Amino acid sequence: MQTEIESVWLVVAITTIVTFACKNSGLWFRDVNTLPTAISRTLPLLAPALLAAIVVSGTFATMRSQLPLAEVAGILVAALANWRRAPLLLTMLLASACTAGLRYLLK
Image (cartoon, one colour):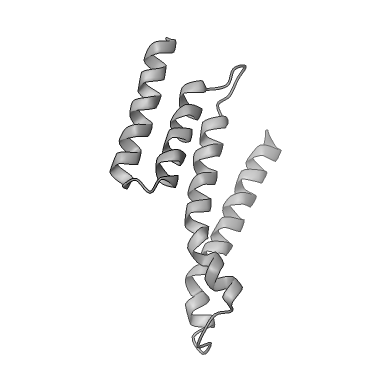
């Protein structure tokens, strides 16, 4: 039990340090006129990647013995709608309808 609490606090501490570094990076690099191209290409991808990691870990964290079929289908529908460049509201409605429909049918 003690090691779980220690590992949670370690994650909180690392997240705090990384957040502080990200927020202050503008001050640290203010004399740099342009960022390297690798960083310029990577920065816009960080927020969607973080959001995807949170969604996937939240979906599969509660797995017990069976795959949460409705949630996985909803994520796949959202990914497909996003790939087809659907508006955000439509993407959310499609994913929610798919998840709710499958939950209703599989109940």
